[in-house]
Length: 61
Image 1: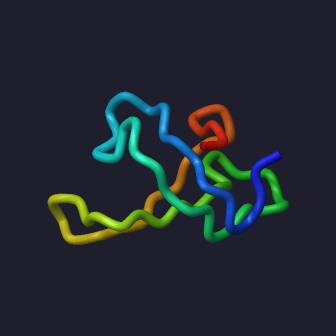
Image 2: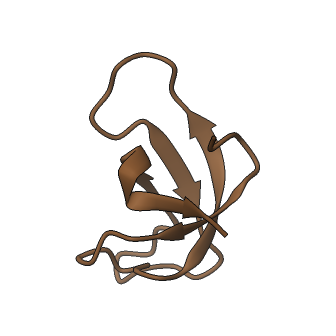
């Protein structure tokens, strides 16, 4: 189970952080399309270091 503070690897191929490891910040309890907010060390092209993902796009690292 993915919980707050867990280290996860990103499996979404079109993501800037594909195959990178990030830290889970929030896991929403309500039904949502992208319930997991992940924070990364490096920033993407637009200068952000967080993104939302589906549970199936993440695996515990």
